[in-house]
Amino acid sequence: MIVVMILIGLTNVFIVGCMQVAYRRAGKYKNSMIIGVTLKEEQYEEREVQQIVAAYKSAFSKVLIAAYITGVLVMLPMEWYMSIWLILYMIWIFGIIIVIQWIYIKYHKKLYALKKSKGWICGNVAKEITIDTKLSIAKSKMAVSPWYFLPSVIIVCLPLLSSKFRIYLSEDIEVAAIILGTIVLVKAAYLLLYYLFAKRRSVVYSQNTEVNIACNRVTKRGFSILFIMASTVDSISFLVLFWDQISLGYISNISVILFVVIQMGIVAGLIVALCQIRKKRDEIRKADDTVCMVDEDEYWERGFYCNPYDNRLLVEGRDNSMHMEFNMAKKSAWVITGTIILGTVGLLIWIFVITLRLDFVETKYIVEDNLQIAAPSYSLTVEFEDIISIKLIEELPEVKMSKDNGAATDQYSIGRFRIRNQGRCWLYVYHGYSPIVEVKTAEATIYFNSKTEGVAEECYRQLQEKTGLKTEKVGAVYEDKDLWLN
Image (cartoon, rainbow, N blue to C red):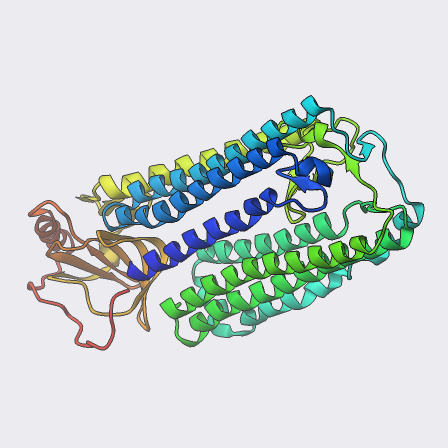
């Protein structure tokens, strides 16, 4: 649990840090824009503008400090109930996102209202669409080929060459589906990002075609290489996990930590690379004196993009070119956004219900025509004729176990696990309570107990009667003290 708390704590700091990088940039005057509002340099120097910018920076800094502090405090409930922690954690994540977005929109609207009251206009009006024909022709030659994604696919498929890994996947179709499904979704996501950023419509920055081609080439080629490299490194991180499964028969904590660190490194790398792409593009633009300034603030007035004259569904973010936003003037954008919101809410409710039941609904055992274990989300039925032996033990064996499909906290371990070098087992164990009933079948070993005194003993007695198997009460049955329970 300590390892998990450390990983999530680092993730919390990383999440807030990414928000800090993304939204703090909005408070810097760059490329004639500040807090999502287009202003000329002399307009930006106005006292009213400076007051709004200062207020935005102050409010944003206070929220960041609160986010870092609460990001640590929100970890505490994990020691008690996973469900309570998960609910608070989701509230923390979405709360931080909503508050930061609210602050941005609030001061964006204030600054835009000031701009309108002053009658400031910057550059061409938004309805005047600038087209560079030569730029459009050169578009297809800017990004690198998507075939460069092939090495990342090959790398992540290498474990399939191992018979051990294929056997591991074949033993559990559900786990195999989760693993392979995750890989396919991740690779598809990187490929989608490649097409969204590298193949999007070219932007006209200047009246000089060569400058436009250079800026768009830097952007599109940079993004295409960026996502291909990220996909390749991501494949390597999966390979680290799979190598453990092949060589050790389980996934070690060190590999999990390394996997998380690599994933964080990918995001950090994307941010750094984005800054470099933007820096190079700005250098090209600064060398040109025919830069095109287009004032489209009216379509961002409400804090999101809404332009009925633009036929694009996705557009580049106002303050962050790495961020894509929907054009909310299109009905399809509302449908997609609504579907995402409803799907996310539905998924969270489903997860909350599962974790609440695991924390507060105790497993029940029924010994009638067979052994029925009624556990939240992980029920099991065992036929009497399949039982090889039954024992009553005081504690779990000190062996290395890895979770296949279940839930493990400091309070309980419920679901399907795998004992190193011994095969599959099912745990329905509340930690700190004894005795524990051990039921062995040809396919797996089942361990269960109860928080209610006498329940485990009664189940043990009933199983003896039903199966005709007789054993005496024993202590822990494994002698290997070098192995430990995960």
